[in-house]
Image (cartoon, rainbow, N blue to C red; front, side, top):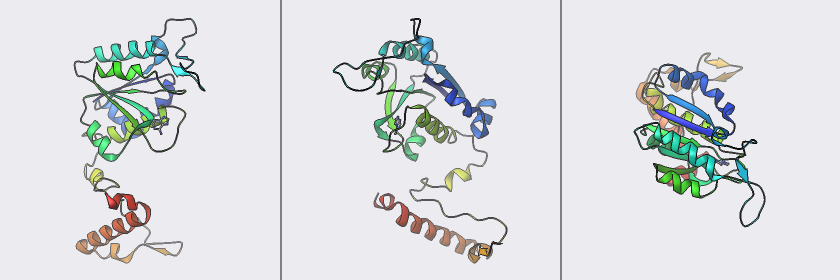
Length: 229
Ligand code: ADE
């Protein structure tokens, strides 16, 4: 899978060199390229923002550098890319969104800052590929970078081969619409706290039933909205 990222803070993405995604990049499973939006400016100050038409607080990202950046990146592959613009005004990112996007051969993340990107950039991107505005959740970040990092990790780990044991992708929160069951390891008693005895019983049927019950109970308590779905 190829992933391009456009940002005015490319160093945010240095962390993609560590851990599982770092290994996947080294192994050629993920081809991640991070670009500085300012490389597509042509003035001495490498300007990427300007005041909003109609007035109001803050600055808006200018369309010209974005247009050139997206053209160059789209031209670089034969596939029509999926453009993801992290935005608090987008659809909410879920595990199902990650699953969908993990099938795309080419993702392009456009990270906005300030009050956002000139709206015409999204229409322009739609002439080059599919466009998705996606929010990490109902809160506001200072820009799209942290949201893009979270999405890249959630999507990247679903690409075959990135996570060593595929079974570990199945048995986790949100894969079956429920929260994950609680996990324990040795010692069996720690600071007087015992591991639930059922897990030491060797009775695999009873353990599976207990874990399911735990999943339902946790979901009822912490995320009743998931059960309603
Ligand atoms: N940019 C700013 N806030 C955001 C959010 N909640 N999700 C995605 N991108 C954002």
